[in-house]
Length: 197
Picture 1 (cartoon, rainbow, N blue to C red):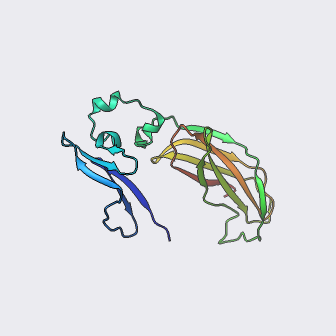
Picture 2 (picture 1 turned 135 degrees about the vertical axis):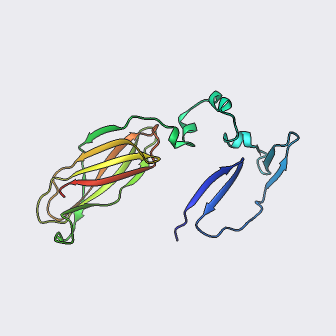
Picture 3 (picture 1 turned 120 degrees about the vertical axis):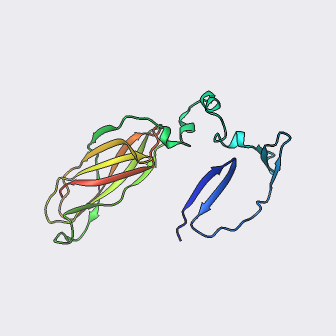
């Protein structure tokens, strides 16, 4: 069963929404109250940590207060639209791995070649990494070219053109595609086959 979760901070309170039904509950080990200055606060009974809007969220701070705060990459993670990076175009020629062979099925309803939806992960202190699988459905040798776009909040941060080694008849290949450094926020990679089409 798949559930989609989202986390939203509203006036210092954390709200978790899910696609599954949620029921109101009082979390055990957490007490809520109002401090002497009228600020809502939450105390974790296990750790004794007191959470207030000031140390949970910056949403209620004035622009002057926010400007005085350090702007580290971790701070920008909470507002992906604040990231400004030039869109780079990179050409890669990765060494692929032959995964095996598949039946020859290319025809009127099956394309000559196809790629699987890539996944995305961060290699700590290095770059974003995606692995793409290409299948040659034809009886011919092909010279595949794939274009991948790494995006953040819908905006491209790196365009990558991947030139692959020739793929033989029915061969299925896996190959890495490297994105920008992990200091650049990326939330999605989209890949498409440029050749053969």
